[in-house]
Image 1 (tube, protein in one colour):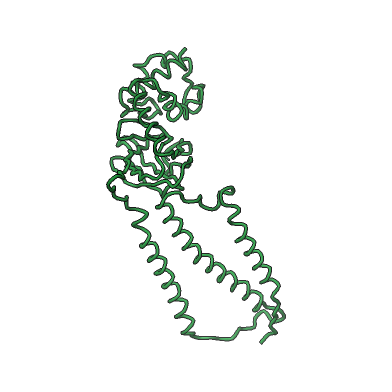
Image 2 (cartoon, rainbow, N blue to C red):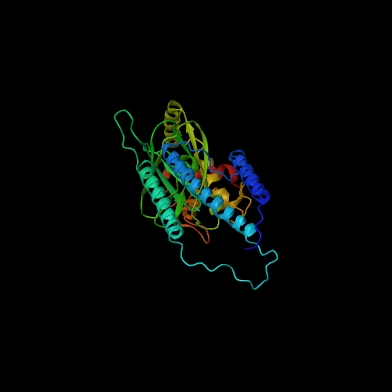
Length: 330
Ligand code: CUA
């Protein structure tokens, strides 16, 4: 046997580095973007708990494997042995082999059991109870905009408003002339695909007011990265009056809907002032002053432009054509 060196300094160094990383992790959450955002809905909480539970095993296995690797490198390094010296010949170690087979099986079983126990709370939309109706919002992904349709006919683009403490049931889809997108607000639950012609259901119940950011999570074309979404959670009575006011303004054509549609739908390609970006310059053109011509383009698409407004209502069409004429007309 070669002499064994029992220096523990390298191991101590590794231990110190790991400890420092563990202590630094919470500090990085929120600003480094490495750690998940804090969950703000019961189903997001379930996802977060699963994440932490699985991470504990991953971290323990990482420490075990890397620790053994380093220990073996130090303890069994060559030193002065000749290059061609054989090591001890070993055959079979039943207990060790059983342990490294049984251990991982057990770990996978425990992880699967935990996740299956959490799954209903993450996935199933809570059923409405007396006095606590779910608010159902249709979430429609199109290239490259999120549309939110409320039960009273109100529509919103890219920013969803929602009441605090109430179950919001999301019916997520995409028109059959569009492509697959994925709805994801990390603080308010997991991803769900917006698939043309199919409705996928998810939900959240926000535990506090605030604005929660998200992003389309399925590569859907050139401006996938601009397909951001946010949910603004308001106090319930504030939300109710917002919704009622929107309904009144949108049917009267007096609200900011046109501006909202411009920013969410047109400006991403044509530039914030219509000065041209990937899409051509449209500010000051004869087209934007002609509501009927604009409607034609929006409903049917033109060249590389998708038919973004094929399913928009007449009120919505009026809102955007009026906005274009008044703000970008020649
Ligand atoms: Cu829509 Cu990516």
